[in-house]
Image 1 (cartoon, one colour):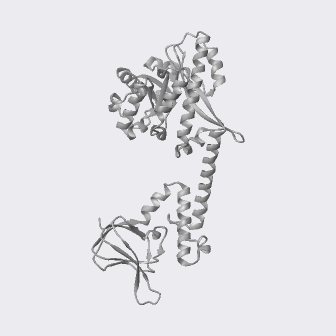
Image 2: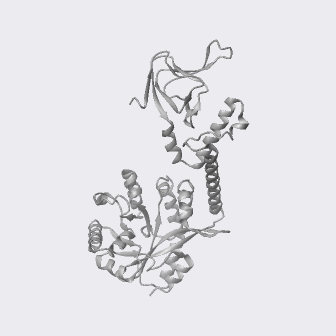
Image 3: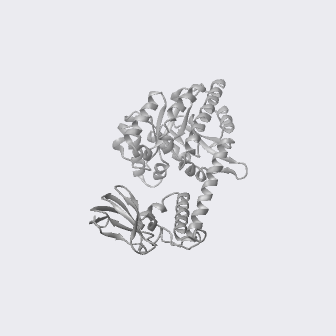
Amino acid sequence: MDKFRRRLAPGDTLFEQGEHGDCAYIVESGVIEIVCDDASGKAAKVLARLGSQDIFGEMALFGERTRSAGARAAGDAVLTVVTHDYLTERLQASDPMLRHLLRTLTKRLRGMNNGAATTAAGSGAKAADGEVGPAKDDEDRNLALSRVRAEQDLTVALEQEQFRLYFQPIHRLSDGSIAGYEALIRWLHPERGLVPPVQFIPLAEESDLIVRMGHWITDRACAALSEFEALRKEKNLRIPPLFMSLNLSGRQFQDPDLLPTLDRTLARYPVDPQQIKLEVTESLMLRAFDESVRLLKDCRSRGVKVSLDDFGTGYSSLSYLHRLPVNTLKLDRSFVLALDVDDSGRKILAAIVRLAHDLGMDVITEGIETLQQSAVLRELGSDMAQGYYFGKPVPQATAMETLQNHP
């Protein structure tokens, strides 16, 4: 622990004014005095006395810097060392706006201490990650501004209703009939046209925008389902009531208004709660297992069904399946691709389907692209399937037209 701890006796000097340093310290116990040379040169002036949990020397974390003051122990003291490398790792993984703001603030503070605030911003200081300051600052500034503008664009898109829901059909393998739909959000930008989800969903998930989008998706998907159901009844289609699958992200999963919003939405439209399936990925589920189980039980107590999405891409531990209050196991397309490799892929998929059925779950397999894959999955016992073979995600009007022509 000597690498991460410093122990000082009374009167020990940790560093002196004018020294170079690349680490900061947190006071675990004792008192540290921050001192500055007196202008007359006669004595050191005590600027501050720091106690437990106080941090000091933090300016040195942003590159090797000259200490603007000294530090000494007023008694026995124990310090935790915070290194330049420690901060570097965290800055590199942080939001570019945060990095940009920290560097800007640090430069201005240094400039104020040096009496040269106007020139400090272009000083070419060594950045926290070891790269030349201006180049890295330009990169982070551009990333930060791009992120801010993108989030603002998403906010405007919500306010101006630029988003659309597309619906991908899910078919029963027993007779090929439509069982339901998965609601997928699309952004119809007034200038850029249709923006792929990969370009805006990750950004929305890093902010609270995904929660607002989730509320909007829930409302629009239930409204669409009510219209699908009205058409099914009007045309007297010989298929059971349809269901609608809604994807949940990590932030939505933690949203305290998730279930109240769902309750209000279900009360607004003539939709049976059992026709709604909330899709949760297994990696999200296992991130906070007990809390997830409680939330999903609350969903099921309302009659809302739960689907474990992308099974096979995360931990894929079969041991926890019996503890999950889920109705549907949704198999990732990797299982379909494995069917074409060797016979072992088929055996694994058959075993998972049998296990799911034994636990009272039905099975949906994703990524079906050919008639042969569909036939094999039907033979192996998968209940439903989804993929381009059955249909791509389409606007509601197109989905309604397809449903109207359903045999």
